[in-house]
Amino acid sequence: MGERARDLRKTQGGGRPPAQGHQGDPLHPPSSQQGAIEGWGQPRERGANTQRGVTTHPRPLQPVPLHPASSLHQADVGEGQRGMDKPREAGDRWREGPAPARGHQGRTDVVAVTPWLAPIVWEGTFDPDLVDIIYKSMNLTIATTVFAVGKYVRFLQDFLETAEKHFMVDFNVRYYVFTDRPDDVPSVNLSQGRHLSVIQVPGSNRWQEISARRMEIIQTAIERQISREADYIFCLDVDSKFHARWGAESLGRLVAVIHPWFYQQTRDHFTSERRPASTAYIPMDEGDYYYAGAVFGGSVEDVYTLTKVCRNQLEEDARNSIEAAWQEESHLNRYLLYNKPSKLLSPEYQWDDKKTKTNEVKVIRFSSVIKNFAEICPNE
Ligand SMILES: CC(=O)N[C@H]1[C@@H](OP(=O)(O)OP(=O)(O)OC[C@H]2O[C@@H](n3ccc(=O)[nH]c3=O)[C@H](O)[C@@H]2O)O[C@H](CO)[C@H](O)[C@@H]1O
Ligand SMILES: [Mn+2]
Image 1: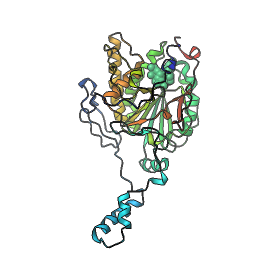
Image 2 (image 1 turned 135 degrees about the vertical axis):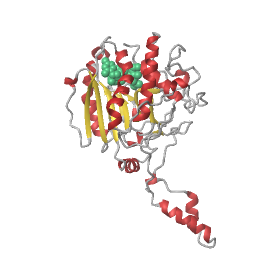
Image 3 (image 1 turned 30 degrees about the horizontal axis):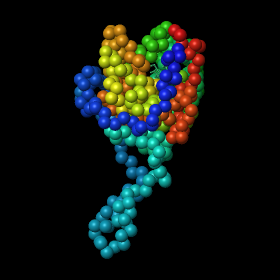
């Protein structure tokens, strides 16, 4: 089991910023990567455009006039154009732009945007109150899938109890718990607007198989149920706890989290699949960030395509008797290289309790707990 532990990943690198100059073209992925959604229904009101390979946000954000200064600016433009002899105060204010909301300062010690201009969410880069005002008016439902197969049911209680305290508080949340032991799912008090479904899945005596089948099972659940019940989805590891706010700042079309052991590393240290025989193959000189397999999400539609493509590639590898270095995490990284995430979450959203907190991590929101593999693994 030691080989499986993330200790392999603990080599600290030189801290170079994330890889740039990436070769892949997100707008023209290889055809094998394209995944139009066949037979996608319109069960919820969504103006989705499902042209081949093109997806849009299920419910586009409505502009909300939040900053009182925005109306002032419009008036100022008119004033400035009409009378040059008027006091310049209004025009000057227009030139300076709006004051940051509620004294929001941003961050200068971390990179908060990718080379393709997707935000990277760190504490201090967003105003939680403002984010809540925007998203709460949209009456969204967030799906959360979590697998608790075999002895992993023991993690459910803490996962669910801490999620009730910190995950998408005041939003509609639907948990989908996939387990082979439905009778062992703990009953946890859920707040109003939150709901839990238990979906039975087969057990397995190989953890690799449990891990690899997650993509297929999520894909099927989206088709059967989740597409009608939610707007956004997060797929999370169960051996984890929430510790602080995980809110609507995390929502986006396609969302991934930067792995806590790799955010300071150069791409040659990434544990991507390096054998060309695997469909998860990423050459040594490619890769933007190394994403954790324990968290991915986005609009239900985009995550559907992700799970479908990864599932097909996992199955193709299985037919060719090759298992990627980190199973579905390797396939996720390959997918996200060619289908750039629209938002990245910093390692605040997937810390590891084995890792000492670093200065730039101001708040740990969600972390993997330390596990005793001998106790919980089916085959080790
Ligand atoms: C932080 C991180 O990036 N974690 C990744 C790493 O996880 P870990 O080493 O954290 O793997 P893990 O043991 O947590 O397994 C992943 C998940 O599969 C489920 N499970 C697993 C075994 C089992 O017997 N029963 C069961 O339900 C459970 O939801 C668990 O959280 O490597 C895995 C296999 O490649 C996945 O890529 C994980 O996402
Ligand atoms: Mn895990």
